[in-house]
Every structure is written in C-alpha cells, then in structure tokens.
Length: 379
Image (cartoon, rainbow, N blue to C red; front, top):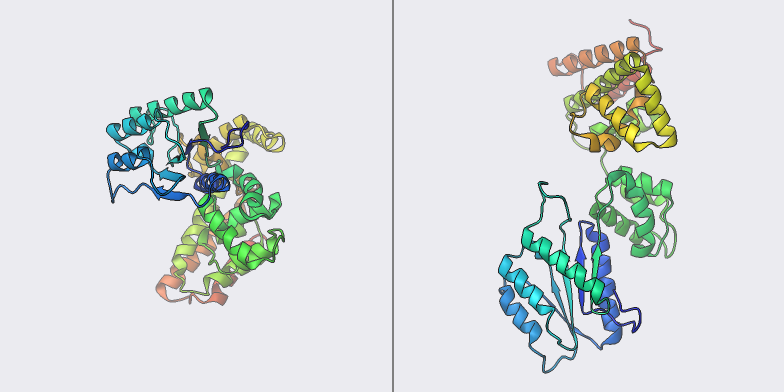
C-alpha cells in the first residue's frame, strides 16, 4: 500500500474481494498510513443517495482552499454504470497534489457464465488498474481479498487473529470456533470481537474463552444433536439437549433431523459394503490427503446418501468429509440401524398422538436408546 522507496502511501488504492474483514483492515491501515504523513486529513465518502458520481468527481479534482490533504473513498464500484466507470478512470490522468483515493468492491473476479460474472466495463477497469499498478507502483496499488474455502477458514482465522486483535489462536481452537460460529468471516470476526472484550490484554484466544463467550450463549441446533448421536458422543448429546430445552422446543423437528442423519449414514454403510475398493481409495485419500480422489469418491458417497447431486463436487468437504460421516456410519451395524429407525418411528407417533410426552427426560431416554442401540434388548 506504500511506495517502498519513499515510504509514502500510494495515491490510488483498489481493494477488491468478498473477504470483507481483511479488506476493511487493509483500508484502515491505508488511512492510518496517510494520517502518519498528514495532519488530520479530511475523509470524504461517496454516497450515491446524496450526489451523483459526476459531482463527487468534481470535488476530487477541485483543489481545496482550507484542507491540504484529502482522502476520498468510493465503494461498490462494480455496480457503477459505464459513464461513472469512465469518469473514475479519468481521475487517474489528473496530477492533483494532496489527494488519496481508496476504491472498493466486494465482487470477485470469476469466469464468464457464472452467476456473479462481472460487467465487461468493470472487467476492463480492473485490467487497466492492474496495468497501471504494474507500471506505476508508486502511485497505484491493487489488493485482492478472497474469502477462503470453508475447509481453510480455521487457517484464515489463525492468521488473521494476530492482525485483527493482537492475540494468537491455535489451529485446533480456530477449528473449534469455526464449528461453533460457522465459516463466514464476518460472523467469525464478530465472535472474535466479543472474545476480545472478555479476555485480559494479550491473552490468547483459547477454548475456555470460546466456550464462555461463543458457546454458552448459543442455542444448539437439531443438526448438532444428530451429529453428536452419530459420533456416539453422549456427553455432547446431553449438553445439546440441555441447550434445546432452555427455550421452546418442537420435538418432531429434531426427530426428523435425527432420522435424516441416520438414514444418510445407513446409505453410506450400504455403499461401503457394496463398493469396498472405492472405500479403500477414500480412506487412503483421507490419510494422505489426495483431494482429487477424496472429491471423486466423496461425491459418490454423497449421491448414495442423498446428500449431494452429481453437480455438487465442490461440496464434498463441508457435507461429507468435515463431519466425518464415513466414520460415523461405521459405528452402527445394519441391525442397529433398524432398531434406531424403529425407536424414532415409535417416539414420533407417540408424541403426535399424545401417548408419549415430549419432556426433556423422555427425549434424553430416546437418545440414550439410540446411543446404546446395540446393547439394549428388545422389550
């Protein structure tokens, strides 16, 4: 963001990408760099609701009588019409002293034909800016921030936490926070900010802080309960049920989620039994991380389980690999699956007909029967 020779901020900075947190951090760093060279520079932000870009561009090229240094910020340039893009490009030809311009876009550079394809005018603008930043790095800089794939969000969190908070987080704890808060960078940053307020200065973000701030206040979902049952983690099952009954609970919703989860596990188990060679390849790809084979066999597993379509190869990691569905499917035999489905069916009919109450104790007993499905004899 600065000219490496003079250590002076560039005049035109273009920040692009859907990683809004990293992009905003770069913007604030750029403003701080300018402020270190200038005494209280004025910051003017373009608002299309207040004035057209033509009027804003006139403010940029008109020298100020009372302010020596001005910073102009322009957002969402990917939504500009052709005339406004042309006007923005014309700014680059002016040699106006003491102005800095920060241009932003949350769009991604994607292939043509995709849903979020960029307009041709904006693509040309990117190409021109890239060319200028290569020829005149002292004046132009282009930075792109792409939110990582879901399976890389823990690594992103591990890297960004020291930059955003001045704290550290281990990879294992980063994975735990992603599991709790999801893979959206804005949601993760929101949780980090709350944890930052809770922790003493310079203390690392650890699991205890995550549990206290992000875990304790969040109600668990039916999908987490199904996952805990599939993993045979009964302490997690009880913890999740406790969380569910802190509010109003519509039990049939949870029965449906548990059934769908175990039906998918059963279908994976059937696939594994009839396709042993594919399963050997998949297990090998997990140990040695061969993404191509992992995606190929994982897609077959997802289709067999009814969780993916033939066109969803890119979803193999979050849907099949991340929750460890193959490992979960091995926890139960065919006879146990039959008992589980029978228990779920009886409980579902019972609570809907009033023969069984939907109390917390009754629900815990159902989950215990699923957990111990191989050990409990038929009554």
